[in-house]
Structures are given as structure tokens and as C-alpha cells.
Length: 275
Image (cartoon, rainbow, N blue to C red; front, top):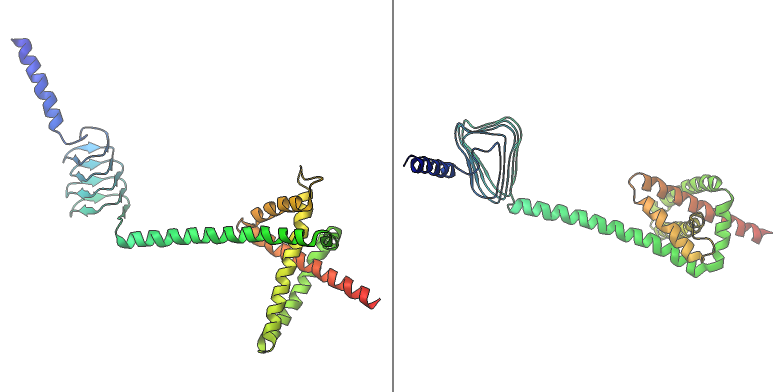
């Protein structure tokens, strides 16, 4: 009889434990159902996913709720931060939170902001990808079209890169000044546009010549066709140009280098005609 009484008391005690709100006795709560922290109850932290949370007691660390609402009663005390994603926070007067309160609710305004932000990120990435493909295809097509006629430009590129940058810099200053003067008059605008097109063509030719020189220095390209060597060099150059700041410096350097090559080429042709 005594054993039956002890067994009955043990069963009643277990049943009483189950009547206590979810994990209220635990040091840390991690649940995916409605959760309540009773008054005068102390837990370390609370993490609830896909359900609502009500706090009457004390949380020593953080409260995190995903896809659910958080209700902080007047007796609630959170000695950390509160993060609610996809739900709302209701805080009664008297509820204490020592750290930050972060609430990311997926209302229409938030969804629109996320869509716009995501669209901008994807758009910028696609633009960068398109520019990278163009920077590879145009010089590669130049190699395939010019074939052996690219050799004079490569000869200038191999001779003195530093000298080409120097010549390209001063040639660029002259081109900028000339373009500004042409843009002042209506008649000069088409000529200014033509100059910009010529600068673009110079950049493509310079990029093509430089890609072969860079590609030749990469192991495994010896004895290959010019277009394969160029493609290897272009992939490396374009990859470096995708790096912030470094890419901008490299782009300006290649532009000056290309203008320098074309300037020497034009001077060489002019010298031949005069002689």
C-alpha cells in the first residue's frame, strides 16, 4: 500500500511538471511552439522559431524569436538584446531590456525595401558581369581580326611600358583639352564624340596587345595560338579589374598604356610618310 502511495505521488509530480509552461524550468529555451517564461522564473536565453513567446520572468542573456510575436509583460526583465524576425514586439510599461531591440517585420514596406535592395545588388552584379564579358570579347575579337597585324602594337608594348605610360599620360591631357574645346561649339561635338570612339578603340587594341604579353608569362601557354594566350591574359586582367580600387588603378593604367601605344604607332606612320 505504501509503495502504491509513493508511485502515485511520483506520477502526480511528473504530471505537475508537464503543466509548467514549455521549458520554463530550463536554463536555456529553444522551442518551435508557443512558449511562456513565468514570473519569478530565471532562464539564460530564449530562442523560439515559428511560434509566439510571452515573458513574465527574467532572461539573463538574449531573446530571439523567428516568425512569431514577442510579448514582454510588465514584470519581464531581459539582461541582453531582443531580436524578433517576422513578427511584432509588444512591450508593456515596466518591462526592462538592457540591450538593443531589433525588430524585422516582413510588412509590405520591408518587403519592398528588400526587393529593391536585392534588385539593385543583382543589377549591379549583372552589369559588372556584362562589362567583364565585353572586356574579354572585344580584345579577343581584335586578335582574331587583326591576326599578324597586331604585331606592331605588341612591339611597342614590349619595348618600354614605363615610357608608354608617360606618353599616354601627356597624350590624354591633350585629348581632354581638345575634347573640352570641341564641346563648346555645336560643330565640334561630333568631332569630340569621334575622339572618344578612337580612345575606346585604342583601349581595346592596347588591351589585346597587353593580354598576349601577360598570357605569355603564364605557365602552359607556350606554343599556343595567339587567341588562347590572349584569352588567358584577358581572364587574369579582367579578374584583377573586378577588385575595388585595384581594378580602377589597373583600368587607368591600361588606358594610358593603350593611348601610349596608339600615339607611338601614329607617330611611326607619320614619320614613314614624311620620309
